[in-house]
Length: 203
Image (cartoon, rainbow, N blue to C red; front, side, top):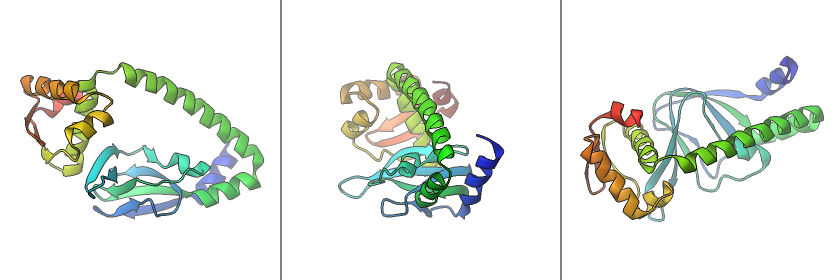
């Protein structure tokens, strides 16, 4: 993508500073791409009883809402600042008008998107080979970032968490015990304390 195309897109991007605890996007909000420049954003959904289920933490350089640029509606996801966070926002409406005005740019973006999808496909294959304890460790570290403490309550029941991590409740229970045996965490039902964050990161 040449400099002129980058300038056209940059002119449409809005910069915002969001305070800790403020929502950055909601299902009822405007369709948009959110890029985190500084700070951290948690992405979560609400369970049937209204409790938060944290899905991931988006760090600087990460983004959320890419599919919304191409018309896919956000029906369940919320984004919230974990600290004072600077984001760059590109609205789907502005993006669509840009593509209509510059058809050549559309072809370039489709090419870039196709290349990215190929990388995502390879990454998915990699994730399928990943050990469950690695996925669990990453998830627990994300929850600690959200809670701003090493002691927190799991936002999902074991069955829901197992489904989210792509495993069975029995396997998940064994992996929790493994992390406890390695003295990386301490768990009492849904209450978890991280004892060794460096060890979890090394997983």
